[in-house]
Length: 368
Ligand SMILES: *Cc1c(COP(=O)(O)O)cnc(C)c1O
Image 1 (cartoon, rainbow, N blue to C red):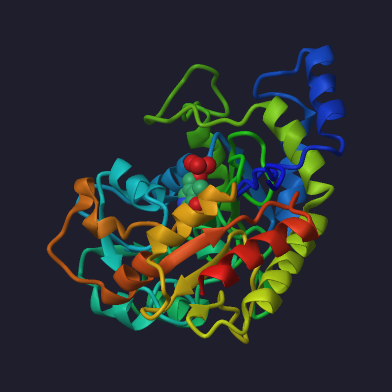
Image 2: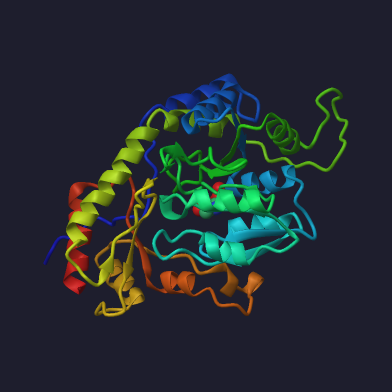
């Protein structure tokens, strides 16, 4: 009998740097709430990393998206175009404002928002478009930005899965007007829960800072000129964030190395499509994702079950949002539907060993 083999998780944070020291410092000093030195330091470091002027830390990625939309004045009666193949928070944030998310199909090549399909969905009510850099690969931004210019639409990047990815050499988070990141435990870097907005626009920066703190007048304490939110990040979270920023380049390099290793091991299997990396893109492979062809001997769910039997975790792709109960619509977005049925995310944690990856590759080869 083989010895039981280590459970390989889909994702796992790596907190072995200065995380403990910085969090302990918050505890010792008493600065555990949303004032304290780590917040501004984290915001500045992350903004510099993206190549933008402003970073505004918030409670999570969903509240970052919500605040971006509110700051742009989007609300009831407006429409916002989002890809149907994304995490549900992208659409929920639109709905929180009272606006309507309008779902667009994905590109077969990059699995991201398809610009021509998005173009077809523009109406006189469309106010914004949210490209999402799904699984760490940047969306095809030039045609999206061009479309936005032609129709005077705001562009908000949902970069929750793509910290550090590059589009034509530029970091994501620097391409839209105001952009959202998440630092949930499985993202490229984590603050436990957390989020951040990036922008080069001074007025938007000011507006978001105001809204995240109950929309309190900067001149007059406890005076509120509109309805704001408590979407602040704590100093404890930002302490984790500063320690994680010290290693972000290392984490990205590791993600890219994991992807190369998988690619080498799976390349010869004709019935598997490897993850994309467009000529204009540098992906961070947040999740290493594959597609099973129709002639793969097992179904997607059977593959996941077999991996599970071997103590290997995996995830199906997102379900398209337009087929899910809160947003169910009688439309067909065939590329996203097809990707969703055939896609699997394989373990992608920066803690993976070479041996772990070979074990996963071997398990898949045996099924092919
Ligand atoms: C994780 C994620 C979010 C939401 O982030 P939270 O911090 O979990 O609120 C939004 N959009 C996408 C694409 C995500 O992957």
